[in-house]
Length: 329
Ligand code: CP
Image 1 (tube, helix red, strand yellow):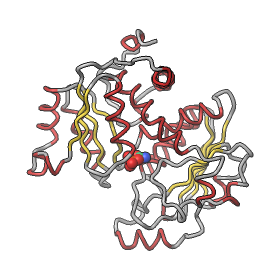
Image 2 (tube, rainbow, N blue to C red):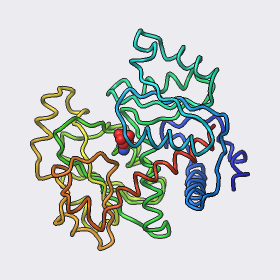
Image 3 (cartoon, helix red, strand yellow):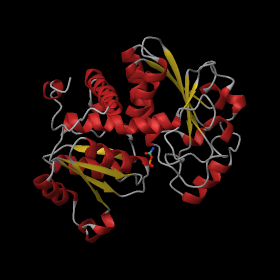
Image 4 (cartoon, rainbow, N blue to C red):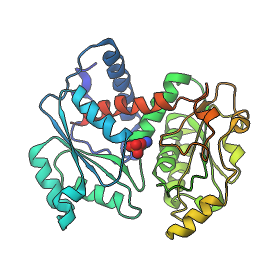
């Protein structure tokens, strides 16, 4: 299996969105992630990237993404360097071109998290244009592709891949901060391509980028799956196999922060509780990329309950990203 990494032909490829990878390429990644996970648990060494260096530039805070990437490159025999823009010459205006070229001379990949709305994806794309090593998204304002890889691996582990599943993606009210729209956007783009029917539910002001919603419709049509948008919370839960209720900001509707928080607070009933969970199939999984706003987005009873797989989902960030690094670096 590890011999076939070179044959996959993905060395040097960027990963800014799952849209840039074919379904076959994504399947290659999931197979490798499963193998790496099994080998790690069996104590089999997986030092596929000895002497290789990953640069991790974080414009935004992180618990899971930083630690899963850094642990992952360590387990693969390489080294991860955490970089904060305020401690780099980015803070004095060094541009994406110079940063990309210089880091490409030292190491084997550049990973970036930059979630500022209207800026993050443009920055990642500019680094990718100039870097001679792969650029990996650790989340931008448009996409969070590594999260969705982990979500799919978790669904496949729990429910298999041989039957048609309904995934509900629902907005939830969490006014402690205005979250990016990248998770729901990446979910609706990739899951229909991999055979899942997706229902996306949000109050009208929480629409996603129109071109992303249109692309999700195209993806579903091409794959023969369903993609629906609803403004009723319960539609994401009814008869679902998996539900991912999480908050995001009304960023497409308004860039005004105070108005955004006011709108988030206007829908307090958009909260995942046991009554909503009862609308799904008996085996319905509760998932959340974390961090979750407990008590606002979801009750403790649900997130700590038997249908919740949030820690398996967080663990799978490690395994899919190890596969991503092994394939591209
Ligand atoms: N889900 C996720 O990306 O978590 P962090 O923000 O902690 O990295």
